[in-house]
Image (cartoon, protein in one colour):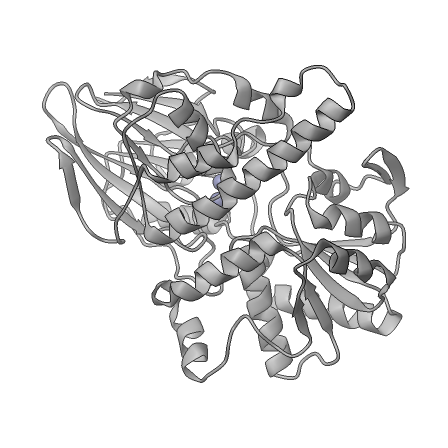
Length: 460
Ligand SMILES: [Zn+2]
Ligand SMILES: [Zn+2]
């Protein structure tokens, strides 16, 4: 049985793992490369898409599902397996991605640049085509798909619908092996959704490591910091901008703000939720209350709408979004989460030079993105062809992260009753992956390995 790491190997994006059991050929995720690795999206897959029988999809983030339409364009005719919530979120995220690609292509052609074929991977129609390959299952069901191929999804606690995959596979020598793919693992205590499920046993584990070298601040400390930023902005009549991922991050921020307002910790704050995509995602969230954690469900039972509070306004039209540029002392939540496009870019142009304003990052920023440049302390940045001094005060709220930190990842790995034979560390920047693999070997005494991109390993 062979496992090939076709993405997220010594990098964060492009998750895609190819498993050839000798009897079956499957993929775990088929994600898009982002930031500096973006050009890799245009290379061909290191396997034949027509051979693939199943794609096990861990969750709806674009770095995990973003190349599914490309897979189908290249001949895949199997089944894509996920939770129902994942499927619903994938539909809106891929459509949005296709729309952005179309706009980028149009801009490229308009500027008569060469290489414009590198701007669009697929169209909205091709996304519609992709959706018909989905087959959904609930968490916790053991499903036998074929002889020698069984799976079960468990809650990964990362975003709504996110799954850890447990796979039971029979290899070429007729031996049963269990391989676990963590997908992205959430931060225990994360708002709205449940904590990651613990898995008790496996022969091999493939684990993410986005924050494998650091510890998040506590939730309480983070909320205090968040509140302080908001209060200071209100006092100084500055704005608070939050570049936000449409799924999970946006809803969790609304959840926190709802608590601030309902408990009268903050008064007089006007919040503009300026992301049509995140609004669609929020609608999907409301359909899956059964996946919420106890706290969120209890709030709903008391009659509180966790995504609504006084002072919150959902902005639909682009013209209304533009009008916000004249306002002061407000909060704007807008996409994209890494400031690579979307309405946040416009708001940054209007707010980035003024030191009374605050920019709050609540999610991971990939190398090569505008968000990453600002976090890394750039004094000036180029936005849509124009240079801007970075005067805005920047904050990173790690405690709002949707990823496990070093201790959480270690805790999750310790949950495996008898140690796995080997752990493969993926989905992290190279220095983080190297650190975390070392850390596992030294502290957990499990063999850990950090594969290179497209490397093939034998699982015997
Ligand atoms: Zn993710
Ligand atoms: Zn990811």
